[in-house]
Image 1: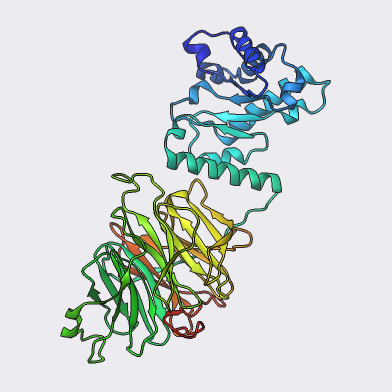
Image 2: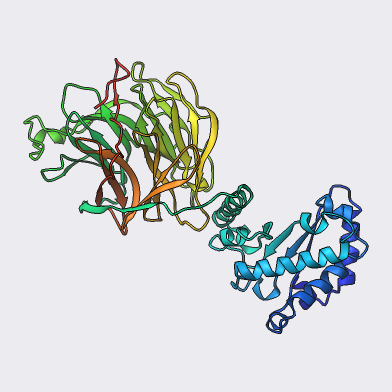
Amino acid sequence: SERRTIYGETDSDINARLHKCLEQPSLKVILCIGETLQEYESGMLAQVVDAQLRGGLEGVSPHALLQDRVIIAYEPVWAIGTGLVATPEQAQAAHLAIRDTMKAMYGEYSGVAETVRIQYGGSVTPDSIAELMGEADVDGALVGGASLNADSFTRIFDGATSADATKKMGMISYLPRELVAMEVLATKNALGESPVWSKKNRSLYWVSATEGEVWTWDLQNAPYRRLMNTAVGCIGLLRSNAPGSIIIAGESAMMTTSMVSTGGNPNNPIADFESGPSFLCHRPDHMTTTRPNDGRVDRFGNFVVGMYNQYHRSGASEGENNAGLYRLNSQTLEWQEILDYKFRVSNCICFSGDGKTMYFGDTPTRCVYAFDYSPDGPLTNRRLVWTMPSEMPGGPDGAQVDSTGKLWIAVTGAGRIVQINPETGVVEMVVYVDANPTSLTFGGDNLDEMFITTRAPNGGGLHRLKMPHGVRGLPEPEFGVGSSSNTS
C-alpha cells in the first residue's frame, strides 16, 4: 500500500492491474490498502480504506470475491518495515471498516462482505501473530521481511494456524498448572543431556555431551563422572550383572561401561575407570557431518538413536535434512533405519507405556509427532501432537512419558518443561527452570520426582522437582538380549 505514497500510484492504476490479473483464470490477487500515519492520527482510517476499496475494486464482480480470487490486505503504511505493529484492537477496527465498505458496495449479493478474506500486513512478527489472528475479522497475514528468515516465518505460520484453529473451533483456553524446579547439583555441564533413572541401582545417569562425560548420582552421596574420550549423544540402561551398566551412543561407535568401580564404592572411582568403555558396535551411519544425538531404549529392549546435523546452522551441511533415525537390535546388534525421511536435529524420542507409540521431533521445525511403533518395522501413522506457539522462543528438546500417558517436553531456550496431552495437544502443566533445560526423566524410589538436565551458558546444573500427587514416571527399560519386559 505504500506504493501510493512512494510512487504516486492511483486507485485507477491499481484497478487496471487488478483487472489484468483477473484475466488469468488461475491467478489470485491481493489488493493492499492502508492509511499513512498522518491520516491515521487525523482519524481518517475509515474514509481512506473506503476510497481505496471503491477505486481498486471498481468493475470487479462479486463472483471474483466469493470465489476467493481477490483478497484484501490491510497494510497501514505507518507500520510497513518500521517495526510498529497495529494492536489487535486497531487491526480489528480497520478490518470491520473494510467489511462495512464491502457491504455497502456489494450489499445485494449475500455473503460478499462476510466471505471476503482480509489479511493484516505491516511488520508482522512471531510475537504479534497469535493475538492478531485471535481477532474475529483478521483472516490471515501478509508477511514481508520476516518471511526471509526461516525460523521467524515458521513461527509466524505456526502461530497463525494454531490461533485460527482455536478461533474457528471456539476452543476455550485456560492457564496450565505451574511448577518450579530447583537446581540440586551445580555440575556445570556444557551440554547436559539424556537423563535415565535405574530403579535397580537407585541411581541417575546423564551425560555432558560435548565434553564426553557420563555422570551418575545416587541422590545421597556426591555425584561423579567418567570420561569417555569422545562426544556422547545419549545413553541407556544395559542389562548386565555388573551394577551401573549403561550403553553409550558415542560420536563414532556404540560402547558399554559400568558407572560403579570394581571396589563397589560409587564414591571411590578407582583406577579401573582408566580402562575406558568397551566397544559394542559401529554407529549406524558414517558421515562426518552427523553424530548421534537423542535416543532411548524402547520397551522391547532395543536402542533407538537419532542423528544430528552438526552443521545445520552453518557450515558444510547448513540447513540440510541429512540425519536419520535408527534402531539397534539388541539380539543381532544390527541397525535398521525406521523413519522414511531425513531431518536436522533428532529430539523428543520416548515411548508410551505399552511401547506401541513413539514420539519424535526435529527441533528446528518446532513440531512434535507421534508414530505407531513396533520393534520389527518402521515408524508409521505419523500425526502431529504439538506445535510450539509462535511467541515461545527455543525448540523442543528431550522428552519423557509419564504413567498416565502424558508427554513432557523440555523446551530449550524457553526455560520450561511442558506437559502435553497427546490426544488434544493442550499444555496442562508447566515446570519453570532457571536455566536452559535440555531433557528430563522421572526417578526416585516412587518415580515421583523429575530430574532435568540443562546446558551452558546460563545452566549446566541438574534440577529436581517433587511431582504433584498422582504424577509418576515409568520404569526405564534396559538394552540387552532376552526378555522384552525387563526394566530397571
